Picture 1 (cartoon, rainbow, N blue to C red):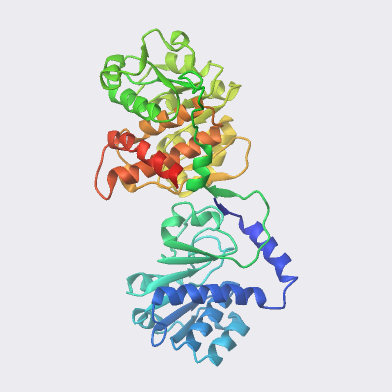
Picture 2 (cartoon, helix red, strand yellow):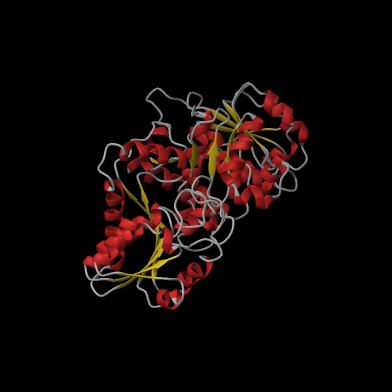
Length: 477
């Protein structure tokens, strides 16, 4: 599992470690890892041209010391000092002793244009807002150049704690981060500025509970249900799907498709699309008597393609089993009814639906995904899976938010969310806790999307058909 910690937590851990180490030792550890990453990216260090973009803080010091190491290996290293009077004195002296040089911002863009590698040490993890005006031309020049761009700890101009990008920022090919991941490196929009991320261990002692988690194959494999020898379809769990309408029968079919592949022993369908469902998936238990009379279930999924059937949504919300609310269900559900539920509730909005639930603009959700998912979970007393370029899962009780690391932009296709809701609902019925069910479903769904697309367009039904392959990939390691 990858973990990320807030700036405040990292700063505290750094202070505690520096108090036990000789002066400057921690910065030297970071610089050694940074220089090694740059050398790996360059391939051949001797004769290469390296430009350091150096701000006034310790981030600039890391860049200067790393530049000194590269200069000692034969690289031509130039440090562009954005605030010469406040540049890290020790790092600057080390660079000059190694044969590097320091320059001002005049002519820096031309220098960057000739570089093989640009090292971004403008702003550290404490930076807020976008780049300062004097740094913007340098970031633009790095973007235009053919050089590889490496960010020190995180790209300058992005918010380390939230992943927000409020203004101009550096776009890196590689980010070398120290001690632990920062939340912004795992959450869009900042994540797309970071490029690949390389973690350098510098010996920080961090708390047991992080601010953010990103599951990996082994973590998901431990969560997925495995039938025992004595299992039957009812012991494995039964998931109810209340979805579809005369206008949107396909949503019901796709939600059932996801549910059938999610680990529950049986799927009950309730709604007006029964004929379409049974024609595609004859193993489904179809009822036309409403959720109350559908038979025993261990969890419900309600809302995909439901149109304006508010009565069906209300009936499902009244059930004393876990309920996943998606799509039209999010629009039709009474907020008070959601908050009043005693059994677990999972909500799966995309950015537009989340914005409507919060009463804010969609751009506010997309720009501050971490804030939005936490607020939704708190406000509705539910586990919230916020879909998007970075899918986030938050629990009403607080604790670490989970960022899903799988997926592909090809998943932005009609019906993909219906498959996800069915899959997550099935995992709920199989007995997973809401946070685990939502996180594991997002992971499998994203992996299935990658397998289905393989670099080309695909449909939601293709994603459903690849869930079994994703499941096998996770459990076989």
